[in-house]
Amino acid sequence: MKALIDLDKCTACGVCQDVCPVGAISVPETHAVVSDDCTLCGMCVDTCEFQAIRLPEVGTGAVTDAAAYRGVWAFAEWRRGSVHRVSYELLSAARRLADKKGVECAAVLLGENLGEAAEDLLRYGADVVYVVDHPALRHFTDEAYSRCLVELVRDKKPEILLAGATSMGRSFIPRVAAMLQTGLTADCTELDINDEGLLLQTRPAFGGNVMATIVCPHGRPQMATVRPRVMRAEIQPRNGRVERVSLPEDVFRTRVQVLEVIAEEDTTAKLTEAEVIVSGGRGLQKAENFRMVEELARLLTGAVGASRSAVEEGWAPVSHQVGQTGQTVSPTLYMAIGISGAIQHIVGMQGSKIIVAVNKDPEAPIFDVATCGVVADLFEFVPAFIERIKRG
Ligand SMILES: Cc1cc2nc3c(=O)[nH]c(=O)nc-3n(C[C@H](O)[C@H](O)[C@H](O)COP(=O)(O)OP(=O)(O)OC[C@H]3O[C@@H](n4cnc5c(N)ncnc54)[C@H](O)[C@@H]3O)c2cc1C
Image (cartoon, rainbow, N blue to C red; front, side):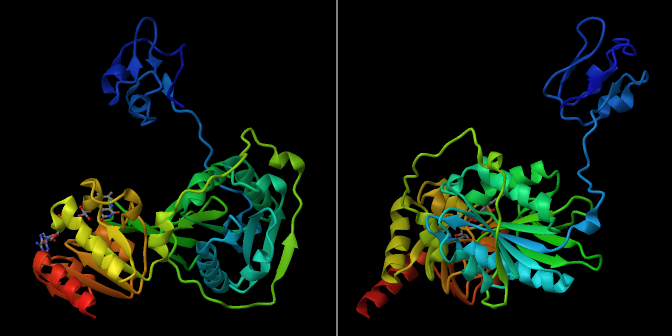
């Protein structure tokens, strides 16, 4: 979309060309021409004294029947024969929000041959589990999954829809929000309900330096994604029901057909599921030194994590990065070796039960969240610690 020129009014005066901050307007002959670089900032509209430029109309997404939308939904991810843990976490959060609003809490499960998965979801607080079991949903595709979910939303009108900020969620949930013309807040770290009954969606903003709370007052449903391990899953069985839904066949017709899925070794899963994580940062100085972190992790039967700096140095793969743009983890023990504790790192590991930080700088911010702080040179402390563990 770009600014529109009224050819009858345009005098080719060139003022719009001069004010356009992205150089998207040219005036080759009799009138101005707008290129695809236009960002719809509107500066040309404000400065055109002939009212020859306007911005295209964009739907606001506002629904006229907001009151018809009721209930809190959690999208349950079915992956290779099991429900992803984030689904239970989201469902527990959805239950809490539904209780606060006094409405029904539902899970939505899409896939094929779903076994007892729907009954299992009832144990985590769902009043109802909507199930679409269809061969076309055997493998995940953006098209089929988004169409199914949109169809269900249009039919049943939930007020709030939560989904996991996983590779699957990140892939198709924005498409769902766009199809429904509603808002979506990604990677929320907190969810609540305000006095007007709206969903408060809190997430880090401006590089993690502030926490922003976002509301979606007009669009429905209010949609948010949450990373795995940010919310806690709680078993809270209810006398819920499972509702199997049939959708029209054309919903399942897609342009892309997935023939086979070849799974890679998932090191991300190893990290997010680990009970012990030993993470290394720039303080390790070089790749060879990072091996100390790996050895310590091995001795503690844990996984290896890394700060973004360590990943950028090439000492660890990106799948091991912990933090805002990496993984969110909450192990029983998190050891941060030579990591300063920038907010973008902290948001990814502050849910850990015990945090041990090793840093030579007593003022390092990592000590603000550490259960146990070791102010020491890591090159003295870590080898000695490894030796001590080996001695038993
Ligand atoms: C939008 C955005 C997203 C980001 N996402 C992430 C993210 O997901 N994860 C992440 O980690 N970062 C992320 N960052 C980067 C983040 O801001 C920091 O730059 C990064 O976390 C710093 O990594 P570090 O602690 O390893 O390095 P540094 O900040 O350089 O810290 C190194 C630490 O090692 C200590 N040290 C040095 N030598 C020794 C020694 N011999 N013994 C003991 N201690 C020593 C120092 O005192 C220092 O505290 C992001 C930044 C932005 C802007």
